[in-house]
Image (cartoon, rainbow, N blue to C red; front, side, top):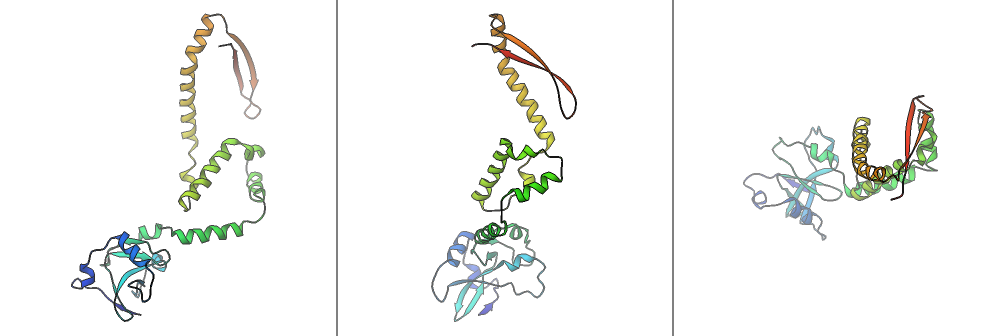
Length: 224
């Protein structure tokens, strides 16, 4: 297949394209194809993005295709992206791209690789740290993992766990805020019950088994 470089005076570069229209053209069936993706034939390719991307091109003759400036396209799914063709373009956005077809095949391969029950993977992690054995039964952890699984299925892309899990500082701040909000909600209820003489307070002194800290808890009974 011949490759004809595009110049500014070339009719192909004059025709206006968008990423959406190019993707549609590249997915068209039929032989010979009116639009094709050609390789980046530069001698020294510094970016690995060009193993997945090439340049969209239009057929201008028998087995001859002319590159369309300003775009790069995925060989696999035909998605088109803007790209500066004068050599000043960055491939960072191309490297971040996750091909929908490639991610599907990768997910199938991952299922085949991970064999056996999940405890084969969680047991070493639990044994190598101070995590309690009952952590896997924690409903909060299960809800968090389910959210991550649902996000992966919805967007079909890898998710950085650091973007999902928050820091201990954030958690403590939110816990303090929740405690304040619930105190504000229950305070008028307790005052009303106390004024009616329908409130019973039972103190409870207990010690934390891990940090050996003494706590005074109050259990309040009333009928509303």
